[in-house]
Length: 623
Ligand SMILES: Cc1ncc(COP(=O)(O)O)c(C=O)c1O
Image 1 (cartoon, rainbow, N blue to C red):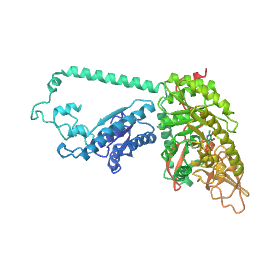
Image 2: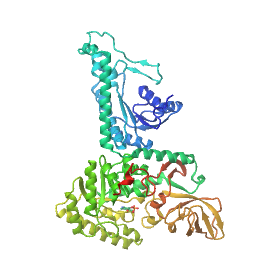
Image 3: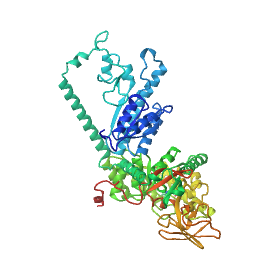
């Protein structure tokens, strides 16, 4: 069969039987990866079996079309799992055999919610996703409300916009095998519906011409809208999908293996422990008060983990680079705060373009930089959210005094295409103070200054809606500090020894699997050196009390205490000293449950490069 849909991703709703099933199987047979929608009570097994039999790929997605939240989550889940969305077949039939004279008000409400509102939801959410992804797409609606109930009379059929064959259902998707459910009588009692004659008088040729013209106009309008929304933006969703495919191709053999059978060094994520960390943070924050979390993405660089954080209640995401923002936008996430000042023109342009259909916030600590952001957003037709960065003691970016902050913010408020949102002031210097008391004292001083800036702005009539600060080392104190609205902690999901010494409440879900390569009388040497694990002085071996002796590039050298059981060939799990930089070394997570690999997730974007996210011609934008 021709593989016309190779590389495309399709979502088919109501795909567990009938025309939805046939469509899903046919799309998969022609190369599309098909998301098979089922109601919570439905069973997709038969459709998936037929897809597999046809040599295609499919996966189930659960959603009840009547629940808007489930529809939104379904569209996001498809894009996240398959990396993109190209085609939607909204097959919203709930009961194809319902009859007018047997339909109750409840039936009607159900029909309406599923077939009308549900269809509208699926179509708009999918269209939004396709626009975000920056490529075209196809949306096709099939619905029983018109196909069966409303089609008994030719006039009704025409008003429902149907042609002569819409009531035929191809149950197996094979040409020539059609089950006719209903075909209107050629000459129904009571004569033809008004308007039919005029319709019939249109000559076939003219009808064709009109249809072609309409198609052309539709395509042109779509093209124009895509250009307006997408500009020359690269295809981020494609980059995510490519990363998914690449790592699954490269490391997929590991799925089903125990972690101690992995080729080492390998980055391992215990997903249940990570989820417990996510849930723990969410529930403790709720108990503490109104402060929310906008978790920092740089720690794990996984859209899958970011999605789980949002599902647990995170209010948006923070990140260090615009490329991270682009990846998350491509993965269908929104409310993205680049907690960093950005000055390269290509990066500024990227932010401005992302802001066309995403809520994008960025840190600013001077007026000329704000002016550059304003010009880019004006050119892109977008609005950027601005967070004034205040230096709370870290000696990094940020305005030093409250008066200066007021002066800068006043000028920012006069610039077009910018929206002042609040202030940011990560107290990162505190995480360098392991002593609890001293760290708390420094955190209090930092937050006193920080909230003082917000108070001065508000006293001068400038609402300071967001006051964002707080890493993992100070998260609880900062979250509870009066006047703070959100914290930016990120490391809690995976943890590491550097942060774990200060905040022992979270599990080490991230480890590096390594193999012992040499065993000297007083040393154990593993095949993970300082190119495999960051902050080696804090690295530990799970279940073995061995202190680090030294780390070279490809050698992790531990002092072996008397009686050490480790020998050459043993597979061990290392807890990293510092997880954000450790993760950055790797292409992929080996995701484990109960020590068995269940999936491979890409680390994206890895390293400092733009991975093509900047788009064509970006290199010439420096001037
Ligand atoms: C701006 C900013 N916010 C927040 C964080 C918090 O991250 P973590 O949870 O690792 O402390 C960091 C870490 O470097 C950061 O740079």
